[in-house]
Length: 124
Image 1 (tube, rainbow, N blue to C red):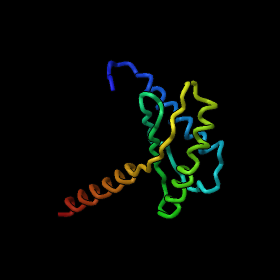
Image 2: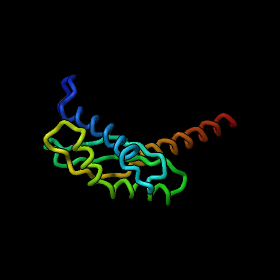
Image 3: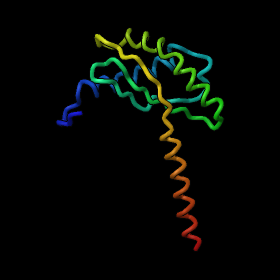
Image 4: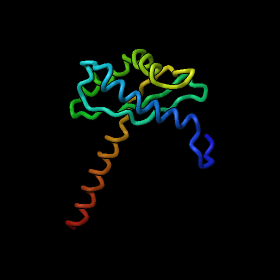
């Protein structure tokens, strides 16, 4: 990926895909199986726009509900792509591949761990 100070067409499209996919899932599809809060963390489309990885983070303390929400989103991939084709100004709308992104949870876990270590050092 080139970094010349300007945003590439692919980066711009990825941002647009990210925003629109979130809107489609949360407002247009209204899948009753999507019960937990989620976010579209990022989208990585291939240069030829044939495929795009869509990273989804689901916020839930209940693992079953988290899995059910992610699976519901992933199973709607074709519907989401169809809706995306209606709003995106591109000749090609990529095939969507959803990936569960646990980086936010991992970050929270590490932050709590560091905080507990820091508090332990203060007591000594």
